[in-house]
Image (cartoon, rainbow, N blue to C red; front, side, top):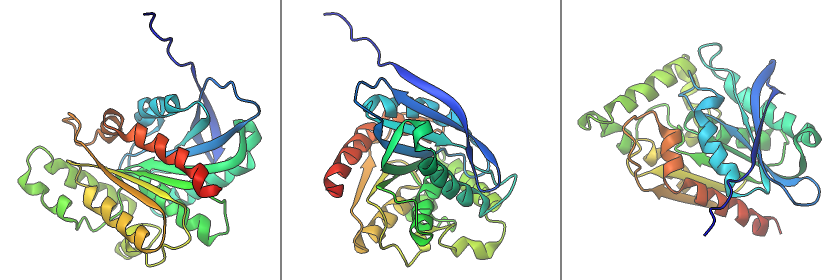
Length: 279
């Protein structure tokens, strides 16, 4: 049997508009034989604990994501790191990028039908918050949100986070998250702001459907699942999955972990299900 040829995949480095200036971004697309522009654009924010990270960290994962379905585009965007300017700079950038994408759909090869926001770790925080901002500010309209191992609790108060001191292999994760929040939220009063900690928000209605993914061995799993429960209680169509652990020794390698487990198939199924939700 002949081996199947690898899927043709294109990337294009571009600039998008953040809240206070241009941001580096990368557009991913697979081979497309359909008529016209594509229906779905996923805007993705990478991780890095708010204080580090760039487009390269999520590159392998996003290549896999586009390979799942050539019918959608992925736009990965940087945002202002806390080392440059703390909260709310990053979330303002996230919302601005969504507005830019909607305005520049022709340039992206997207027909404007379905806009999904996604992210991993700190980027998943921004993805969740940008749905609140879009609701509160009258747009852009979002069809879905995909939160992968999200950082949602600046207090680091969940059971899965608190148990880490007894787990030497993953004890570093609590320190990494704490350091990230110290940089991002130097003003303690901001730690309960819903745009910093969506888990603290009491206003979670009228948000787009959500897919929330965590890992069995990830210290962020409890806050991810707590947020999912809150969304469900507010009437938001939400799918929460705890994925099997991947053999990753680096506690910061969440992009790699998400790629190795079943995240890609969960995301593909979620996006396919949005068709029914919109009909």
